[in-house]
Image 1: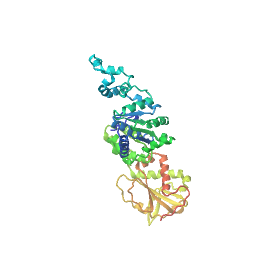
Image 2: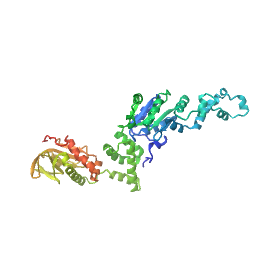
Image 3: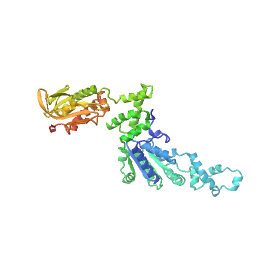
Image 4: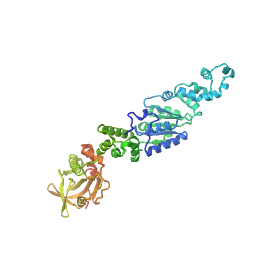
Length: 443
């Protein structure tokens, strides 16, 4: 159902990297354009935002690129030389040396005496100041300076570029030297946001800013939808609404956190199911209301209790402990939330939906209620509000609509006190009130 590895992206091979989302495809293309121009590119972002995925995709699409993972490495040169395949270097440069064998001293007489060319070349290592021989023999210091020399030799033979992942502050001086070495080869770096923010050298900062790609605010709903579908196609329609709700609530804020959440939810459902349809139903039930009437009443009860618990903070002097029957135009209706603040009454109801909206005469009447009895005293109604999970619910202009994602409602009903408190405070934020401000009576 899902193709989400247990390991981090940095350990993937470039053959199985999946890059999805219109924003990320745009950033990949921008990086590819810079690569074609032999430019320096810096990809900045928090851990888990997709920096490594872009680097791995670049590696996949550019055979000569060398990927350096600096997460646990101090020395760029050491990591570079660990990635160089000596035998491949020999194989790639051998045809050139063979064509120039006579110039290097491999005469016709050596050939007819049966001296093997490759054995002869190996015996000449260190004797010629020739870049092809240096490459064949890998005759370089195995350090940063040797890396620069090697790259200078090979750049004319085949397409080469450097991809540096997980750049840390300790690497910045060496990267500055690499940029200033005049190699004219593509250099793409993935730098965590906190590391980038600490770079004080104005010269290197300027070079990085010239082609900076920031991923910290890259994710969009369209990206999320495509990413979930790419990694978990079988259940993407069912789990995407859950992911979107949690992303909007800032509980999932990176690509990595989204994928690991999806993986956990699918695996949890899979333990209780034997087929795909069962898994889909399990996932869907985790963010679907099954009895909107009773759940609406329960949410009103939770909010009354929450408002009572933070009443001092919000300047509330009274919260009615039950639903309250109110009257207007010789008709009555129930409101689930009734409270007093600054000698004005606030009246609210919860209306939840699982599909089509029904005509609600009680909501029409709520806009007409101008006075209410609370604690044996009459109060003018200052504000009226409806908490709902539907953007499409049309209300009288005198009634404030507060839309809450279904998933958040379910979590409140399951006992998430922190989210319940956030919603209670959001009621007053909708009226631009924080503690003691006066409110204009809405009539």
